Amino acid sequence: MKKKINHKPLRTVILVLSLVIFVIMFAVMTLQGTLMYLYLKIWYQADIPMPQFWRPIPFTILVSTLVGVVLTILASRIPLKPIRDLIEAINQLSEGNFHVRVHLDLTREFVRLSESFNSMAQELENTELLRSDFINNFSHEFKTPIVSLRGFAKLLKNPDLPEQERQEYLDIIIHESNRLSQLATNVLNLSKIENLNILSDMELFDLTEEVRQSVLLLESKWQKKQLELIIDMEEIEYYGSRNLLNQVWINLIDNAIKFSPDHGKIKLKLHRSGTSSVFHILDNGCGMSEETSQQIFDRFYQGDLSHTTEGNGIGLTVVEKIIRLHGGNITVHSEEGIGTTFVVTLPDIQPRNT
Image 1 (cartoon, rainbow, N blue to C red):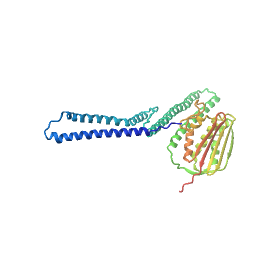
Image 2 (image 1 turned 45 degrees about the horizontal axis):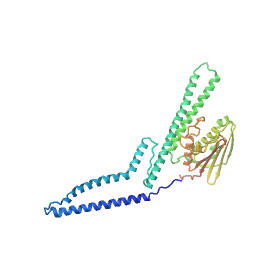
Image 3 (image 1 turned 60 degrees about the horizontal axis):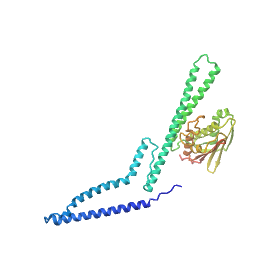
Image 4 (image 1 turned 135 degrees about the vertical axis):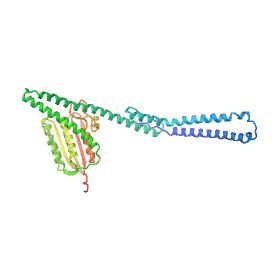
C-alpha cells in the first residue's frame, strides 16, 4: 500500500517562517524610516551635524534594501523550482523523450501532478513502443507478399514452365494478393473508424443472417483446416450499422479459424439477453496468457510475438471500436492450451425518427 505523505507540518513551517520574516522586515524598515524622519526633521533643518553613530543609517538602508531584494528573488525561485522542473520535463516529452519522469513532493498537489505526468509519459512510451513494433511488422507483412509476387511473376515468364507448376504459382500469387488487400483494408478501416464518433448508416437488419453470411464468406478457410463449426443462433433483428458489424463477425470468426488446430472445433452462439443481443465465439486453439488477454484490443498489439500467424495487430482494435460505437462491449476469456472465448454484447438502439 502506498504511503501517504503528510504535508501539514511543511505548510505550517513555511507559513510561520514567512510571517516571522515579514514581521522582522517590517520592524526594521519602520525603525529605519523613523530614524531618517527624525534626522531630516530635526538635525537637517536645524543645520546640526549628523551624530557619528547615525551616519551609517543611509548605508544600512541601502544594504538592507539590496539584501531584501536578493532574498526575495531567491525565496521566489524556491517555490517555482517544481514548476520549472515540470516545464523542462514537458519540453523533453514534446521532443520525443518518453523516458523522462518528475518527482515533485513539495505538496500533495505537486505529488498528484507528478503522478499524472509520469502516468501520461508511461502511456506515451508504451504507445511509441507498440507503434515502432507495428511499423516493423507492417513493413514485413507488406514487403513479404510483394517479394513473393515479383518472384513468381518472373517464373511465369518461362514459356517452358509445366502447366501444373504454372497453376501452383498462380494460386500463390492470388493468395499473396489477398494478403496485401486485407492488410490495406485493415489499415484503412482503422484510420476511418478511429475518427468516427457517430453512426450514420443505421438500419434494421437480420443480425443472424449477417453472421451466417460471414461464416460462408470464410468457408474456404475453415474447410481447409477441416474445422467443425457448431452454430446455435436465435433469429434476431437488430438496428445498427450492418456494414461495420460485418467487420466484427468476420474478424472474430477469422481469428478463431486462424488460431484453431486442424480438425478443431469452433462454436458460435447468438441469443437475446434482456434488452441486448449477445454473440459468443469459442475455439479450442492455443489460447492466450493473461497479459495478452489484457492487451489484445490495444492498437498495434500482437499476441503472437513470433509472427508465425498472419496478422498486423489492428483487427481487434477495429472490432472493439465498432462495438463501442454501438454502445456495447466485448470481453475475452482465454486459457493457454485450452482455447479462447469472445463475448460481444450489443444493447438495443432505438431507431431515430425521420
